[in-house]
Length: 288
Image 1 (spheres, helix red, strand yellow):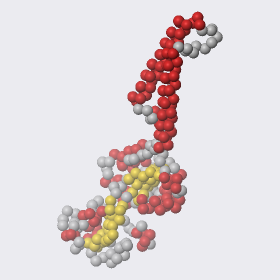
Image 2: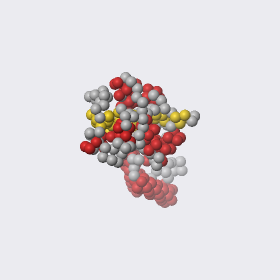
Image 3: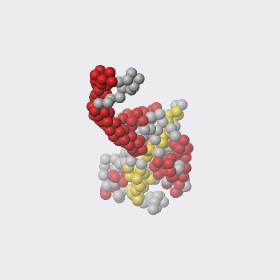
Image 4: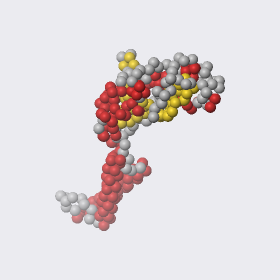
């Protein structure tokens, strides 16, 4: 964003800390680089550590702005019909239904057996074995009523479940890693620094070592190219949200935007700028 405002490029230097441990913090981190005039402007979560004792050593520039990066992609998940078919009834209801069906079938079988054995002389050889006694008719009538109620409730619940169900969606880095999506990223210093700092995060390191690379080359690309691949599907692109969403708004239709999913990567925070005291760049970097 700042590059587009000022229309020039920056030479980026990475530091692993904001300040040193002293009051002014000048012996380490971004503060040390600024204090020794090796950099002109520092950016990051430095304002969280901007104690009153340090104001006399640095210029803190306002306002701050939120910082968040994410993998953004079209949802590769789908509704599983097999699960949805069973969902209208609970497990106990399914067992009860099966038990009731077994009892009904046994009762019908018994009614047929009784009528056939004791009344076979009255039944024509070519006629169908339909129960004529009150007991058999009552069993059939009860079965008809229960089946109708069960069918109506089941069909309406199934339709409602299918209409309201949401497809499975990856929600974290582990699930993203386990998908078949190709991964790519904007080439930014904060991405490299975050991966370096998260050495103990298994899934960050797995993604970095196996999914960020194609043919032994890092899959870095410009936002326009990354967003175009996301639009085609099967691809997850990592960048700052303020960079990708304007491109998405210009190139995606409404339905495609609704299909997008995002998973945070670099820890979200609030970004501020810090400059050398009385720096010539202070007014230049004040964004209003």
